[in-house]
Image (cartoon, rainbow, N blue to C red; front, side):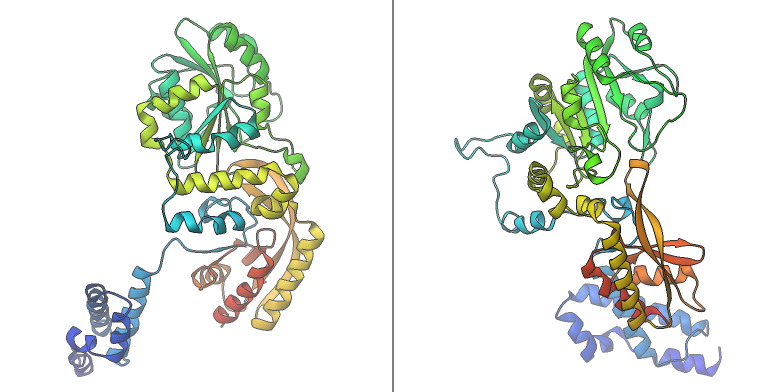
Length: 464
């Protein structure tokens, strides 16, 4: 080994010496000694390897401290952190789906810092079922007799089938055998529940007679699954929910309607096609309606079941219920978010999802112009251009419906789009955009005006 490498290796400080330094003493005021020591040891090992490989010739102590500081930040900063969504996808699964209303978040502080009335009846002082405390608002908004909540809609489907159908048969149209995110397929969920799947019809056309012929003495229910994350178009046919409900009630079966995204309001008011609402399903005769709480409702992740009181009571008493129930934070967020649906005007103003949907193209153009101006001032090397774009609701909701928007296309000389996008993600502002045609695209529909200076500052820091 050359003398220079040997000299650098000998000059490396010990962990004991590093712990006595002023820099590390500052770390120890904020972090425990074992953690700091571990980061120093790992940094020393890395610098030793770099010296042996000839990858460094700088001051060893400075290199060790710099590496140790980066490692310390990596293991102490939250990995689930605030991000800026410039993708144009409103319900972005990778970025946490719905943005919670600010008023809802602010109202949670007292309950999160202390105790809360999660499972107790304030009038009697007796123990209560936690989901019963928010049943009032769910029944009010949907017209159902009763309601309960579990940790997601897949869990709702599993619980309903296990409690009400196993080990009997459940009839489903072949065109509704969906696969949701993470390769979870309806037939597999049904198999886990103990219910037996009976497929009827074809992929694109299913008729009432198909259901009628499939009903036997072993049939427990008909399950309709709304294709919220895909569309079958062209030569198609499906049976209206009201007709399926009538068949179920004639044959003493349970009619289950899985709406997926779960609209509580008519989306036509926000310029989107009509999606079946939960209330419409109840009015059409569904005995149980299942839907997500973190898509079109925009609360925390949960699955909601509304319908006949006798059926909801069976679900509450099933052993699976305890395994899939939600915690206090989920219930508090859901209840406070549901209050916004009582007032359409307030919903559009205060709910981030519906505010994004409601923002006019004229306002989006103003936002794009402002962002371009801020970037020009903070990062003059960057080239920007404003173009029309298409946003999407996301998370399997209205997958084929594009929403007109504007985007800023950003490029930097001698820096690929992939490299620029990575630097934006890793910056303290944590900006996520789209890569297309070797440029980074920043859609302004999913941005707020307050985020624009932060994006410009990020580009100012990362553009060479």
